[in-house]
Image (cartoon, rainbow, N blue to C red; front, side):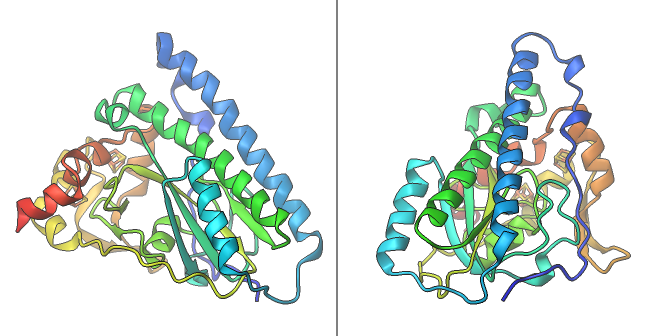
Length: 290
Ligand code: SF4
Ligand code: SF4
C-alpha cells in the first residue's frame, strides 16, 4: 500500500542562494518577508509528516462523495485554483526529498495548483516575477498544510508535500490527474493559466478516488510550431530536441544552466512569461493555431 521511490534523482531549490543582497527597495523587503513564510510552511509540513508516520495504517479507507465535495469547497476557500486526483506513480517518486524528508506516500494523490499573478509574471526576469513565485510557494504551502489537516480531521490519513519540492514529480502527477500537459519548457500547461501556476500534492490512504472529469488540454501541436521558450530563454537552457540523461531520464531542460540563472534573477520565469498559453491564454492560442 505504501509507495516508495525507485531511484529518480531530484533537484533542490535552495532559497539561500537567491541573490537577495543585490535587490533594492521594496523587492528586497518583499523577499525578506516571504522567505521566512516559505520556511515556516515547510517546517509545519515536516512536523505533520513526522506525526503521520508514527503509526502508518495497514489498510486503505473509503470516503463518501460528501467528503470529496467538502474537500473541493475547502480547497477553494483556501485559494487553491486547481484540484485533480490520480494514483501515486512510484516511477515519479524521488529517491530523496530534500525539502520535507518524506520517504513514503500513500497510494493515491490529490494534486493541487495555485495561480501566479499575471502582471507579476509579466515583469520577468525582474524581481517581481520571482517574488511572486516565492509568494505562491508560501501561499500554496500553507494551503496544502491546511487541506492536509482538514483531511486528517475527518479521520483519514494524509501526507502533504510542499510546493517548493517534495518526494514526487508534481507536473507529471498533474498530467496524470488530467490537469494539463507538459509544454516544451518542461512546465505544466493548463487551460486556465497556461504555465503560470505552482503545484503541490497531498497523498491519501483513501481509495477509490472520485471520478472528476477534466477538460482536455492539447499543447503538443502548438509547441512544435512555437518554440518561443527555446528561442527566448536567456541562457539557452531549453533544448529544441529532448536529450536522454545518464540516468535514462528524457528532458528538454539543461537543469544546471537554468538553476544558475534562476538564482541570479530570483526566479527567472521568462519561459512562463513568453509562453503564448500564458500571454494570450489557452483558448486564444487554440484558435490562433487552427
Ligand atoms: S513557449 Fe511555445 S514552445 Fe514553449 S511551452 Fe509555450 S507554447 Fe510550447
Ligand atoms: S526559468 Fe529562465 S533560465 Fe530556466 S528554462 Fe525558463 S527561461 Fe530558461
